[in-house]
Image (cartoon, rainbow, N blue to C red; front, top):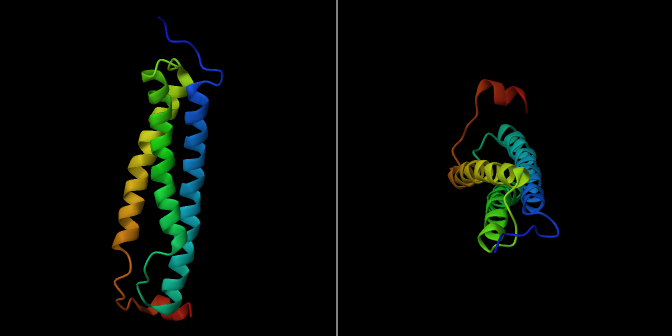
Length: 124
């Protein structure tokens, strides 16, 4: 029995997940910038804020969805892998890798060390 096309292709679901992952990466960058300003204002190495944590984990989650939805539908015999599905899987792999770096970054931040320098003192 040949694999039949699902009513909405596997690629569409994967592309939507990849777009949501890209939006999550944007959210992470906005939160990272907010943390950076706070570090400069306080001269302390502050921990990651909740926006960074949520954004980083969302990038990983949506990246996994972008990979697993098209491949899962294909393995279940519900859809064929078209061009959109392949693009979604590749984007998903990139998102998972990027998200893993973001998550590790949120875990490494926040030593509490003083970071004051001449430039940071001028920004106060």
